[in-house]
Image (cartoon, rainbow, N blue to C red; front, side, top):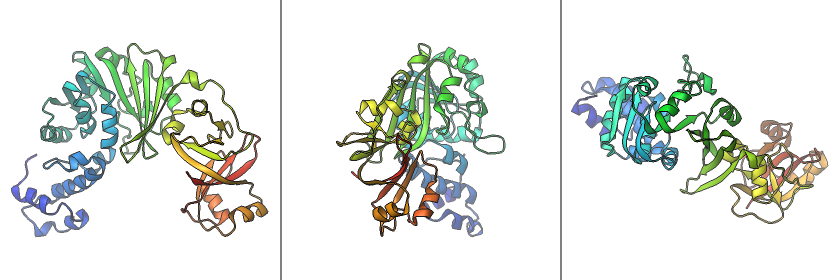
Amino acid sequence: MKHTKATIEFIKEHIADDPSKLALQAKKYPDVNMPFAVTQIVGRKIAMEKVPSWGNTDGILYPKHLSMEQCSSEITARYKSSLVKGNTLVDITGGLGIDCAFLSVNFQRAVYVERQAELCEIASSNFPLLGLSHIDVVNGDGVEYLSRTEKVDWIFIDPARRNEHGGKVIAIADCEPNVAEISDLLLSKAEKVMIKLSPMLDLSLALHHLSFVKEVHVVSVANECKELLVILANDAVNSKVSIHCVNLLKNGKAQTFSFDKEEELQGCGYAPKVGRYLYEPNASILKGGAYKSISNRYNLKKLHQNSHLYTSDELIIDFPGRKFECDAVFSLNKKELKTNLGEIKQANITVRNFPSSVAELRKRLKLLDGGDIYLFATTLVDEQKVLVKCHKC
């Protein structure tokens, strides 16, 4: 992927400019490959936010926007890297190479396999700039490559989650390749396999369709679920799957909660009323389904079987989620609304096991979004529908 000196200099000089405006000025710069230059400027802007260590490395090449949109962020790639180590790694769905780059640092040798020749060319250029000369780049089909290669320590696979029309898909069977169909091949070629699945996929469905699951990692960034990672191993017993719920925070810290399905089968206590404090588990815990485990582990009472909100009279400082101090609990009749909301003009509204949507409630209560007041619309164990007014701890 060679380009003229004029194009390279143009990119350096205009790296902070508006790409859409630059695209309209192609005639002014006949010696510049403007489509390539704009792609690089757009890519670097995305990388500075998503993969800053790449964005700050001169000479890194970027592909078309779709590949940048689909690639992992640095924070999630670094988390995945913390889970693996060994002598040999094969990434059979290479893509832009971000996951492969971060995973590979824990291996003596790595292989990046990718169908698209353009992405292979980009990876071949980028890896040496990042000090990753131990990664071999292979242009080909990942499954076909596995069928003829020797056994390795780890395989990483991130199945394509778009159909032939470009639309997003979620189910394992709709992804390419279908990891459920090739799981025997994967485990015959590696001691362990890490599969990156859609964060929208129901975890119970993933566990139903996949065998030899050893661990699941539900990864969120700033309380937004980003990745569902499934680790297969030949020595795994599916009834003993450990589930790790991880919420990576912008300050570099993380909220973590690990449990297994056996623990979740145990019962939990329910609160007859809302106590002084209200707790909302982070997105990874809710996605992982640790509804009873979180209650028992932190000695909290659940408001309702389906509400997934918890309460206590003493503050649990290290709770992995949002913590609130309750100011009032009331119904939606006009008198109680007037008494408890009065002249309030705005509030943050959350709905948990409640018949109305946030939009419907906001319209009914005539409240704008934002401010320091939080309203939780939920159902109590006696099926009473209430609003809990509170503020953050």
